[in-house]
Image (cartoon, rainbow, N blue to C red; front, side, top):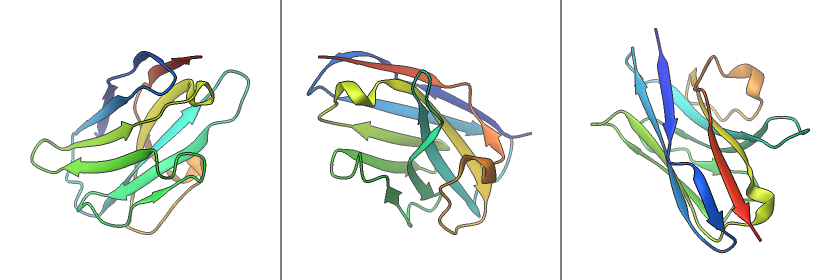
Amino acid sequence: QVRLAESGGGLVQAGGSLRLSCAASGGSFTNYRLGWFRQAPGKEREFVSSITWSGSGTNYADSVKGRFTISTDNVKNTVYLQMNSLKPEDTAVYFCATRWGSSYAYAPEVYNDWGQGTQVTVSS
């Protein structure tokens, strides 16, 4: 059974940085894609970024492009989301999720396994 555990959220001032981690266990992720999503209060869950476990095929939502960087550590089975130049509108619960296959995928419903989420709050 795949398990995902996010960490690294917190409270930061606008312009600051945070690094989120997603530790994966319970499977072999060679042919998987890992995605980061976020959900703000009263809003739908939205795509942030994704990557294959080999570290290729990265993509980003336009709203975070140039500020966020996704990466993998296959030894630790962990995926990171480095978030720089944070804005108040980045405030949300951030989730990681996996799906089988390396093709790009943006819709939350095509991801099968989810973590519990980590809160990111950016103050102005």
